[in-house]
Image (cartoon, rainbow, N blue to C red; front, side, top):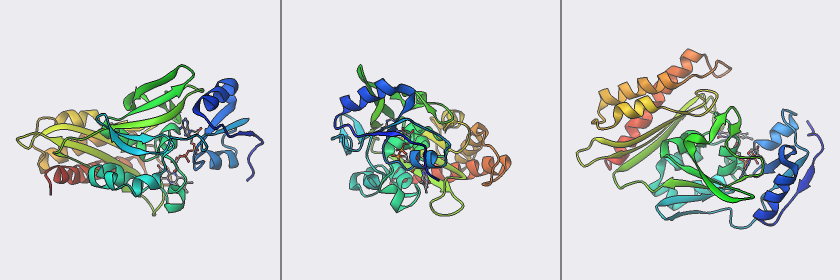
Length: 290
Ligand SMILES: Cc1cc2nc3c(=O)[nH]c(=O)nc-3n(C[C@H](O)[C@H](O)[C@H](O)COP(=O)(O)OP(=O)(O)OC[C@H]3O[C@@H](n4cnc5c(N)ncnc54)[C@H](O)[C@@H]3O)c2cc1C
């Protein structure tokens, strides 16, 4: 289908882009990789009178460690994560997430900032960023502010970004040496959105007990889900089979998926349990250096 008509803007600076968003407010949309926005406009599930393309603004595409964080520019493409040696070596949860998003064609265009800003609980990065305890940087007319990822997803397709703010950076705390992570996704076919998926990031203490753990679930409710009861249960415990099984059960209890072509509520909750168990097992093995 053909989208409704819109004015296309291609600002060359961040300030110009923010000013355009401020001028047109709810009539404007940021255009990044276009992999979610353009299908929505074409299917007429959404509309915008003004598209503000942020693709010509310099310095929004990078992946680097700095000041205790892995910093990802808001317009960094999925393919950049996929091919980053640093990400593959030190951030397996992030690498595994990028690997299972759509297909290579989409990943060459889709951006990490867009994946979060879209506010779609079926997208893969939200759960991963919840597990990492990440924060995002939003730049607006008054400058930049940071938003904890837990406060970022405010509803179905809704985020804490104001209409005149651009997501300019994602910050993941650099994990301690005894850390490991994993993303495990069930999809009907390669490239599909998740039937269910679990993101786990864990840090072990000196005695092998769980010191820090983050668990996020994809497509498990109207917003991305953080399995806080499961995290709380694991903290301070040895992550053996019984503890992992109980944590996985608690994670599934935090899920409130809806039934659709991908399965019933019961099936999806059970998959959330199974996948959390697998992701925890893998993350713990990585943290143990296996
Ligand atoms: C065939 C196909 C399969 C897909 N499969 C998956 C999948 O398996 N997993 C998955 O997670 N996703 C999947 N997607 C969705 C898509 O990959 C992501 O949503 C994508 O990462 C969005 O990024 P984008 O840069 O393309 O955003 P856009 O489409 O440009 O924008 C999406 C939304 O976010 C806003 N936005 C974008 N960037 C910013 C910013 N920097 N600041 C403020 N607002 C912003 C836009 O205004 C818009 O509302 C798939 C898409 C397609 C087409």
